[in-house]
Length: 485
Image 1 (cartoon, helix red, strand yellow):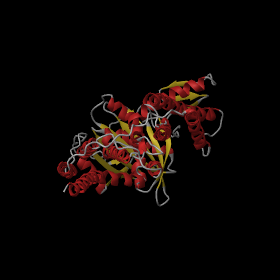
Image 2 (cartoon, rainbow, N blue to C red):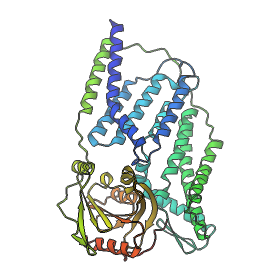
Image 3 (cartoon, rainbow, N blue to C red):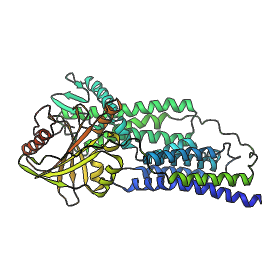
Image 4 (cartoon, helix red, strand yellow):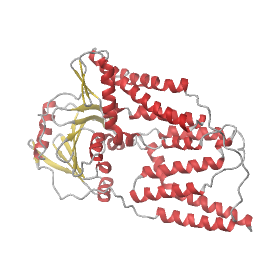
């Protein structure tokens, strides 16, 4: 009878785990394919699978697992419940990493002839999630400030006429902006991914790993600052550093220099291998069946819970966009079914209209982390090829993009975010940083789309009319200058 109960119990536990993991796994797979996420997570997932397979085929593990793995099922269930209630997919993805850790411990990867550290392997799996956008939104602005200050210090060693104000560097009459894509989030994650993969294989002791983690963060920041300094120095010397291949080549070279100390000198002694031990006294099979049934019931209950996110924006009273701008009458553009569903579910307000050659989108929210994002995510999801051109600070600060549609037509996209109190910022990173520092209230994102090739004076007149009609005072008149980057 005991033998009959035990397979049933493990089947119940496995079913509970699969039910909890199904939706996060589907979302993660979609994030690898959806252009809106712009994720290279599949590369990290393949690296995790390759490392695990190499360990699995190396031979049988010694001894048995030393931990009760039911605890990790409870942790994963708690994370999955939080993801379900808060409607945050990323939390469900973190639950998958907890599942991976439990599976690695169950398979005894740390006790095989080619051992792996289950903890570091599960951390490496986290890089398969679309985390770059999250890092840019939450840490992008402080990274911009740090990179600008370090770059300014490096440039000051060579150029005497270097001046820095916030994220702006002035050098030889050139105004260089450390934009959000220049904050270094991409390089930071690549270097951290390399470091974590090394740890999964080398299994270092915790003190050594923490010291080198700090060193890795410093190397990433210094490498990005060196890249910005090279770009600024090239511009000061009359070299078009923003053109390809010099722009990408500078990033690759500085990233390689940042990774070089890790590749050459990071050779930690492995932590003490776990001592093999005899299997613990097994739990009675009927009790396992009861526990498995309870886990299965809890899993079904968790996935059936309706979303109750806490970051819903307050509703806004109807407020139509202006009837006309610069002599152009308004033509309303309805929200897509997906957009309409999103704003009904999470509050806030979005309106779209066209005024001749100008497309205007206004988003209002009290929850900027939920509603505000850079336009390239939506445009890539619609099949556009999007290139970030830089940040414009004349008039209303704005992030500028070039978008090429599936039909080959080109567009310029400008986005300005207005904080409570009227302060205008060009990036979601800076807006989120202000919000985290206590600026609550109504946030407004104003997106303007105009055809490429439209005379700058006409673009400026349309944008100035839009800001004036919406009672948004501009610091300076909008001019025809191209955004610096």
